[in-house]
Amino acid sequence: MAKGRHPDLDMIDRCAGGDRRAQRVLMTRVLPVVRMQVSLLLRHMGGPRATSADRQDLCQDVLVELFRKGAQELRRWDPEAGLSFEGFVRLVARRFVARRICRQTKRYERFLATAPDALDVVNPPPQDDEVERRDQLDAVLGELHAQMSPRDQVLFMRLFVEQQPSTAVAQELGMSMDALKKWRSRMYARVDRIATRLRSEGASSPRMSPSAIADPRGS
Image (cartoon, rainbow, N blue to C red; front, side, top):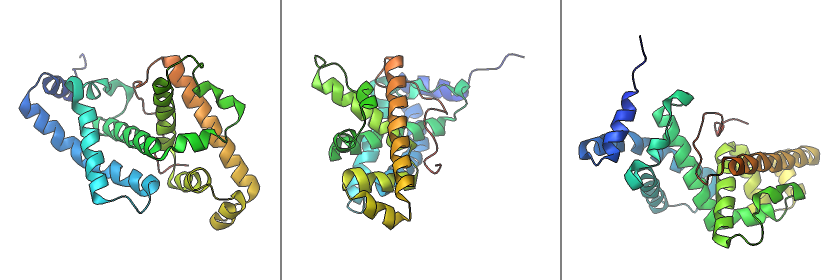
């Protein structure tokens, strides 16, 4: 017996077609997921200064991203990839919020300023438009943040945003300098892999798969 089309795809199609009832149903489903991801990322990346208004604004922006242009982002979901609809929404929300925070805090500039030559892959040729370059960096750093564990977020904040001395960070977190150096190398390697993949796909907003972004609770 042939496998039928996933019912959520029909719901997304109706939503994209302007069906108000379908839009309300999907909005009800995605809103708690978006709120949770926004809160988690703000906690790990935004620091204590993130306010309730910040969370509400980001939630609204993520919803706009999901439903704009006839639910274009939602229509990227492929149930055959093995990711649930809610799981896909979590990935979109994590990427969007991480990119926004990276852009607002200019973390990508501080991070890439310390990166080895291998990271030239994320920099387009000089003739490329600066806006395009920033969009590329936002996409790479946004995905990197979406992959980070809470400990990774703390390390990134201490080393690249607050620019604290490595020795002080290692002592605070109970790490050896060798372990800290290995962590930094892993981050650079991740950036290199992400940037290479995004360039090979030739899209600023590629289709996501379960393997594309690790659970933020992982290592």
